[in-house]
Image (cartoon, rainbow, N blue to C red):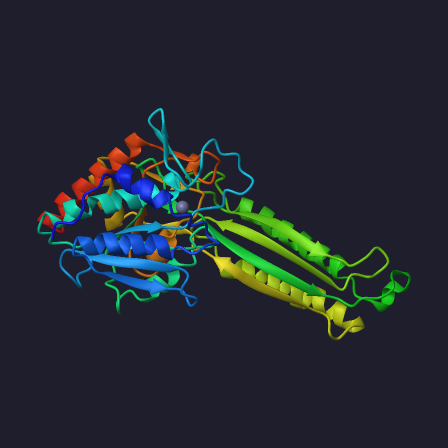
Length: 391
Ligand SMILES: [Zn+2]
């Protein structure tokens, strides 16, 4: 079937035109992609959210039901609110060889290149299939990719290798930190502040927890460091705190959130156990002496695993071979690679554009980066046609 052929720049213009900010629906973009693929005779599997407002798309080119190489990208973008843009963020604008628009670097540029390559993939008899795996809600905690991964091996062919096209300036990234976010709710007992001993001050208890978290933060710095990361250790930050009612009331509640950016090898469950044990053994008994209803709830609200491809990764070997490089890099930002890796699909991060442009006003990507990605996917096509040995 001879569907329409577009350049990656033309497709990027179409994709940028859909305002897929994470808190908005992405189905219009997904329908556009589904329709484009259908014009090429490629059927898509859609994995919608419960409300039907968002969806992931999975499609295979080449032999069906065979594990191949997945090209993975998230379709959502970060908000433009409060940012000063020179031109409409949802209209692709070219100035001096740079293409401006929300999502150009992070990461509709990669999706555009993948879609532009579809007719080229179809023009050859591939022995290894190439899958397209486009998700949503990555920017708010890699949420949308999880239900898609859950269908690997059943409705969706589980990929043998995943290329996550986050902006790496087309260099090969084989490890990143894993952000984990906790929320702590301290429930005290309110009292008139002149009668403080009758109450349980939730902010005072939160203060004890803060000191414990500061200790953990220090200990993480003292662990063996990994010089590939900047900073070379796992960080812990209290990022939000809220408590109290009025200046003359013993505060009944205090809520705080903290995040750990773990390097590979850091045991997240050990940190979780430690803070729970401190709350249960040090804080709660004293609180309940005064108020039996007092307590502390601790929840992990989001977790992306730290990602390390490992020295023998077939995904890394293939990415290096196709990119013509011999060196890998580590980054501090998180991607969906950790989730693919944990699910048993070896992943590697490589994509066009510079992460420094991501999330900024006047986000841009160099045209040259799209050309490089187009060429990379051309070499992937050649490899997928002729054989499956990587090394
Ligand atoms: Zn991204």
